[in-house]
Image 1 (cartoon, protein in one colour):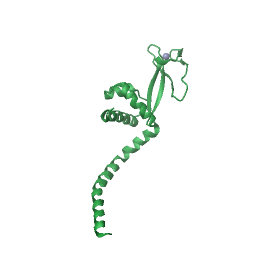
Image 2 (cartoon, helix red, strand yellow):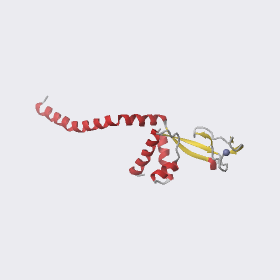
Image 3 (tube, protein in one colour):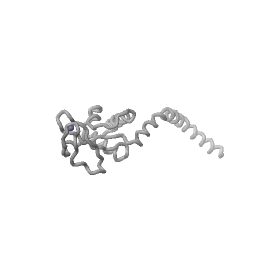
Image 4 (cartoon, protein in one colour):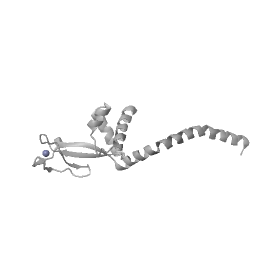
Length: 149
Ligand SMILES: [Zn+2]
């Protein structure tokens, strides 16, 4: 994936990190960015590995007009086999057709994004100062060489 596509996805996730949204789906990211969902999914998985996101499996009720999220589990746990939907009053057998991947912004990353934006203006000033000061320090070096300070 090229940097532009990657940046689009990262921006979307940063926006989510600022919002009250707890969980999001790869399809939402694909729709927003116009990037194919399988490519989006791949990058989101990479972001899980680097600790920015968490993958959560949602079990949804297949009942007509229900689609309620019954239970969630992570890959570390064993997936449930059966779950009772109180809306439909039925036991739901869980298989691949009613398990959906969703992502959560990892708490540490969310805090970091929020903290980072507070520091952004300060960082800008620091970068400007450093780029100005860099030639100065080189000059200072030359001066010190010539004067043998
Ligand atoms: Zn149901």
